[in-house]
Amino acid sequence: MDAAAVSGTGKDGRITKDDAVNAVPSMGTPTGGTRSTSRSKMSMLRRKVAERLVEAKNTTAMLTTFNEVDMSPIFALRNEYKETFKSKHGVGLGFMSFFTLAVVRALKMYPAVNSMIDGKEMLSYDFVDVSIAVSRTQRINGASN
Image (cartoon, rainbow, N blue to C red):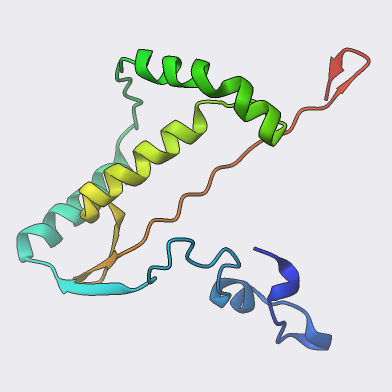
């Protein structure tokens, strides 16, 4: 989000936390769609399951699960387009784009995963926001920082 697009309501026009939280993303809706939400009342069973899942998360050790996936079609597609992509965009074609698209498609197939529990209701979204943290490493005289 471009900070210049956020109006500050704090002292001397400074941007407050509320200004940042309530700001509309500068990227808009590239597909021309809406960014609406809907609320639905959860059944007693669903609420109890949600409570128990939160309790389990807070009281047990968390584990990481590894799943094996056949990536050969992705490797083939990447090999086919990596040179064209690099010449057009100036960066290499990695795997994150494929992973992100898979996540978006999965969230559209299973909208309950792209929802939030608010009291006794489930807040569902008709859009998907994906944030990806990246780290940039600079190389100086063969050493990385």
